[in-house]
Image (cartoon, rainbow, N blue to C red):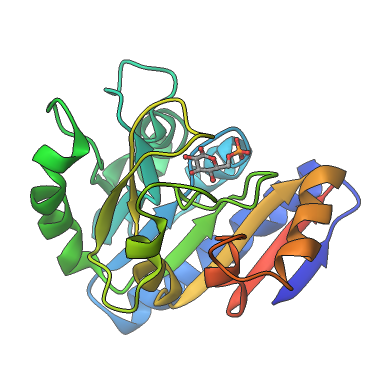
Length: 223
Ligand SMILES: O=C1O[C@H](COP(=O)(O)O)[C@@H](O)[C@H](O)[C@H]1O
């Protein structure tokens, strides 16, 4: 793991957006398409705002969330809504968004269909993850009902997930799909998450799921 510490969050958001733009641009030089998989939650919005204005062949980029809460895009808790409102505007409006939600009573009803839509965009070209203070990343939560399945070497692309720390059912990319990404960044702020990150380094993924993606990741932290 590489840890980059910034004096303030604003500087971090600009630097990370710049890095992601260069990596997407490099991926597009090597291939006809690139995929950008990004966290939801409260942290990455400013990165999306900056990235959305970058000049890039966005029409060759497929964007999808790392995980989704089982709510429609009308909900403020929807990770796809965050991507649509903060990233797929301006220049980046030309990108294609693949939501990880469909109008079905539970993730189990549609998880295979959703996974089939993601599969052609794998491996992920550029991955931006977040992390909770409980050391979850994407929706790989400690104590989640299907964490073991999602951490397995032969895990499916997408795994439905329910966890004590999650208000609604979730769907998440599995650890192997996240760990296969060509470039991985984790964006965190605050003393509590920094301490959790350092603790996660010496714990197994079953206790600290973020551990499953740490080896190849660059972690960006600001107070
Ligand atoms: O629930 C989620 O949490 C993590 C961390 O979110 P944050 O609000 O603490 O930044 C996020 O990375 C994940 O995509 C999201 O579904």
